[in-house]
Length: 110
Image (cartoon, rainbow, N blue to C red; front, side, top):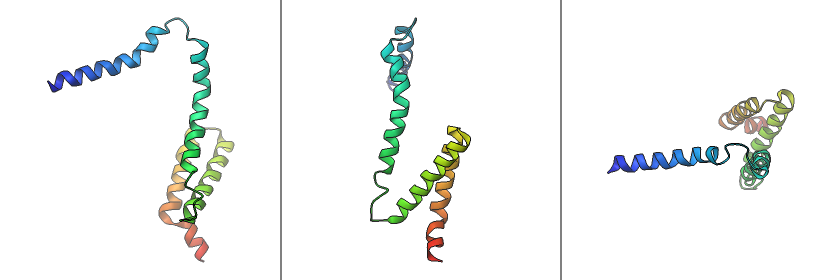
């Protein structure tokens, strides 16, 4: 019974993945192509706003400082290299180094 359920779920998942290719075999409608152009930047903006919403709280000021420095670093990298993967990986690495080694607090203390 478990194998049948897993097979059924796998078939339904495959169906939802391949169905758009069968429906829009010749050419996708303009609405679909417009959504394909507009959705990625809007989703990135939404994720950015959602991830920054708690950064400016006064409960822990270090979070805001780390986040702000990380954002500035990622913007600098992206303007310099214009490569999203470099911006994401190096920005994440930079932010994690800042957070884990507590560099801001040690600089402010001295």
